Length: 84
Image 1 (cartoon, helix red, strand yellow):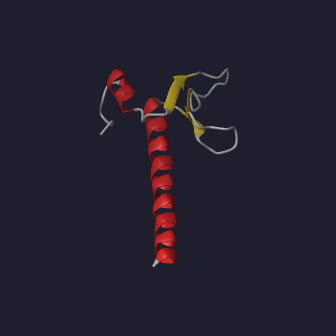
Image 2 (cartoon, one colour):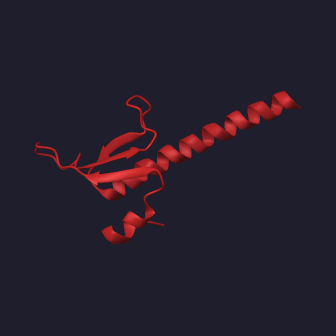
Image 3 (cartoon, one colour):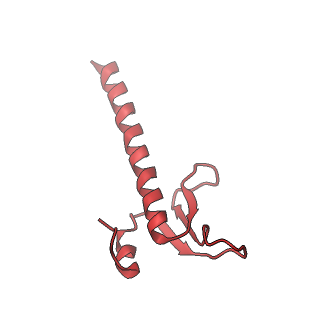
């Protein structure tokens, strides 16, 4: 979906509630030049990270959201089972 797009086009694919910023660190590697965080980041809930590019941040956000959706599905199935 967002792969093979220009940077300005990729910005459109940042999911609602997430922010990605260019924040180069004073170190010799570019691996941490971009920071991302969710609006609900509280300092401990792992809704943030770093990456070498917008693409990397988008991929990490996508993985976090997929993991969260899987967890929600598991919880929903558990409670469905209890209600049956």
